Length: 181
Image 1 (tube, rainbow, N blue to C red):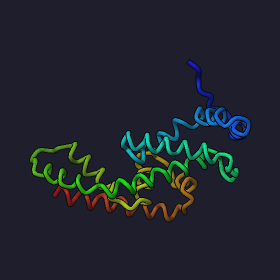
Image 2: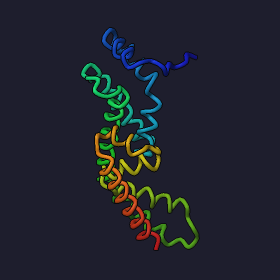
Image 3: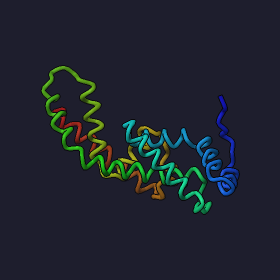
Image 4: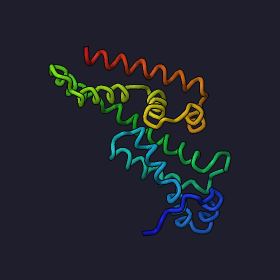
């Protein structure tokens, strides 16, 4: 089996893409496929959504790689595309969330500790956050990204991100209390 090259430079990928877009995209994926997929999975948490977002991200990168201006690293540029794709799916998902509420209420009657239920309540709380708070919370909580990294990827201020994270935590705590008390 052929080993993927991780030490390919951004310039090598871009040059290959100019000469042969398919070859350039293959080099891009050899270097960035796993990190982009993991990033999307940490935000979306649902395999089907992650796969859809990943495919859409790759198509957008392929279609627009010739427009990359080099103001940031190639990974940061692709990461923004992936993040925007994930946010779009989260907005769509949020609109179809109401049916899960009745399922959660039926579980509330159980007298013993139901860890699956608690996990569902936690995920429901995250899903109900405004998209920016949701993104920051998931990148910090699941991805263990620093505020500086999140600021670089999202082009937001560190102070604003900290506020978003703080508000997200408070809303999650309130939601969990309302469903479990």
